[in-house]
Image (cartoon, rainbow, N blue to C red):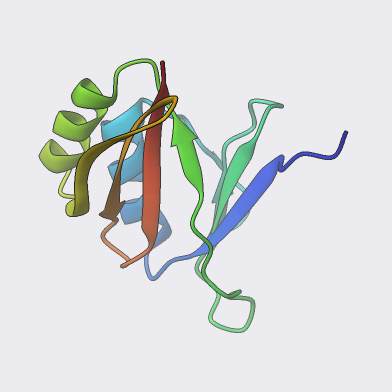
Length: 111
């Protein structure tokens, strides 16, 4: 079955993006030059593209977590802007936020 295994986000500042996501979710990144960095977990990885000539259109990635309330607090503490507070839906709950580059993402916890 096909699945999403990588999401690339255009960013203005790779170091700032790494600091935000590292602080909010504990992720580590590998630099691939001065304008690109990515997680390399082998699962669904995230890349940051800071080269204006290579930037792509925005997506809404969904990040699966074990504790949505803790993730909400961590995102706020890291400087994320909440765009949709925690809401419940059949099967779980989620919230949306914008990162420092203005990308909107969702964080979801399954029941």
